[in-house]
Amino acid sequence: MTTAAPPSRREPDPLKKLIGELARLPGIGPKSAARLAHHMLRVERSDCEALAAAILEVKDRLFHCSRCRSITASDPCRYCCDPQRDPSRICVVEQPFNIEPIERTREYRGLYHVLMGALAPQRGIGPDQLAIDPLLERLEGVEEVILATNPNVEGEATALYLARLLAPRSVRVSRLAFGLPVGGDLDYIDEVTLARSLMGRQAL
Image (cartoon, rainbow, N blue to C red; front, side, top):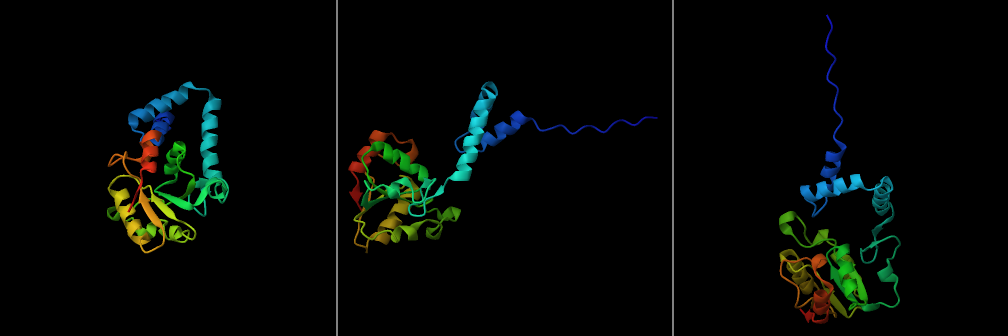
């Protein structure tokens, strides 16, 4: 009497695994993940290898600037080291990727400071979780702090908190003005709208 061989374990479907990993990315749903995965099946292997290498290089070489918390491969970053930038102004943003849309406007030539988030008590994010103290340590010689947090509930709460914190100090505090939709995100706002907001910023 012979015994049946145990069923072999099936290897996980690599395509489903790739779709699952892509779907974990912000802004990528299951359908978009599936389209991206099938696109990778069609392209040359060298293209996939280049993408994988770029991802690993980002993880291996990039880090946060010790002064402003922007993403950089050298410390201090290119913004902090640029002698052509105005050190008397600091633009405060929530995340490193908020810097690039402001740079594209070509209306701002000061320095930056990244908070690494916004106040969100319901998610356990308070002032101690943000890079607020390092901002206060950079105020010597600074004449204006521009609060460029996102125009949503958390961004507004963060801007008001910082404005109150900076009020006793000898520094002008301004906020991005008209043109920004409430509930929006800086990363999705066009350059013209953002440039007008920078030029029309108001004191708090």
